[in-house]
Length: 358
Ligand SMILES: Cc1cc2nc3c(=O)[nH]c(=O)nc-3n(C[C@H](O)[C@H](O)[C@H](O)COP(=O)(O)O)c2cc1C
Image 1 (cartoon, protein in one colour):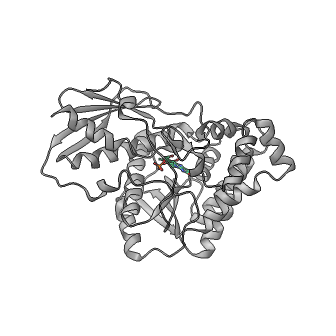
Image 2 (image 1 turned 120 degrees about the vertical axis):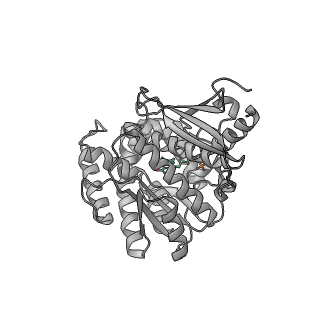
């Protein structure tokens, strides 16, 4: 098979989403129609990458996007995680085989799917839309829709609580400082400030405050610095959507490959939402703080953070009707809106290829 075909597939696959647009993958084209995807995770530098789960989910989203992209060229793509690789640097071997398959209808949404962090219309989802979303994630996962005004208010309050932890936790500060590209509408390796979801005046202030942790801490302590971002990024969007969606696995994850599979399912969910004219925003931070809390793991030297995370976890479980040991894979909101005018784009294929351009 010509390398040009493989490059076309990878050129589409690189549009898969990843937490904070980290793109934790590099590609290697190997002889005999194979691709080695070299994954990595950011658990050592990013608070939100609990045990690499967020990166593993991104790997799954990438592999699923690659599988879908291959159908455009009449190819079946199948992946397996190479034995013996550490979870922090998994290698996925992908084989491409000619097959009598038509282009998957989700392929045309790969490049246009994008995160919407702003308020959306709360027009309820139709039953047919809910059914399509539930079918998209397959039988390993169930979806719980939290759509009534009361449920959205409960989630918005929970997001407010979660944002309180996120914005005052010193260990989260370097992540926030490094992932925003300021004065940008598009960003190839981060999130442009215009896509963060705050108004321009707040963005300007945030930019100045976020240069130094001391400023952040001072603003938070004396000037109610968390109120405006919490309202704009968490509480208002929490209310202004058609539904929140909690994706739960039928079986608790037994290893990193289960997080990869969850990532494949979330990408099918997201692309299906896009095909239905809906926008989506992942809301992973409460779920991540819950992972820390339920694993009994400290994530901050700041006193009280662990207790706040436990309280958040209990509140989340109350909303979800779940117990402490129940697994949650993915949490997001969906709704109707115009496409965002700012978004993350991607590194070029040349930058993502380990063995250069063919
Ligand atoms: C596993 C995962 C977790 C994510 N968590 C969040 C999140 O908690 N909040 C958020 O606003 N976006 C979240 N995102 C969205 C990414 O930031 C976004 O997909 C990425 O920046 C690329 O932008 P795009 O989706 O517009 O192409 C997440 C994406 C993935 C794959």
